[in-house]
Length: 266
Image (cartoon, rainbow, N blue to C red):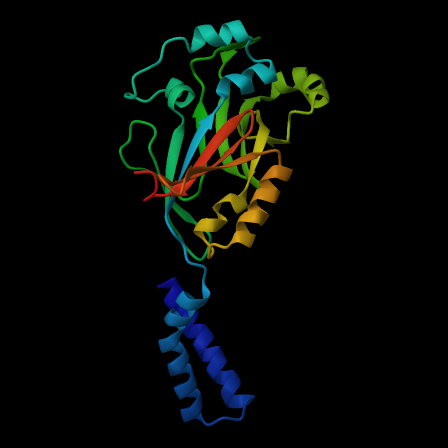
């Protein structure tokens, strides 16, 4: 109803402009607005980029992240993840062993997504954007008040999808100097609500999804490859002419992301 009301108001404004400023007759104004209203859905369809549903599979190297931050040692990590869990019920260890994938089903004109995730213990888990947060509760970090667990997160950021670990603000204050000197932190954002800070270790450029929103071209792919390489990502096209195309992969030491049309690779 809101969209209809906005359209009616815009049509009325356009009609008034044509009538008073364009010096057209009232009948001519109505005719022009009527034709525009009938043809606008077709015009939008022709001019708007063609969206194709696609899948993004994320395989985060949680151990590499936690070790790089100094939250665990190599030996501690191996003892934590030695046993591979069953796929159900879903726990944070499933993220470590199996990763998580999302199917982007649609995108509306406002930029909101309809995203279905294959994680957690809900068969129909949807979000309106490509973002998740998971408590790594298999790891307990001691502090003066007891113990806490870091979070893994994937979320839209300023320059792309931010991937990293969220820690307590108090822990960050004690380790900020060391980690800042290491140069591994791409972004840091404090969440005052929970007393935590997000430490982004990788930023996946938004352009990786452009082949599913725009008409494919060699120039588009070359631009994409150049941008991800500049951000420290390795690009690989999976498959060949004989066996078919299975999507594209983008990887850093902290995460591998596989992106493909939903009808590829089956």
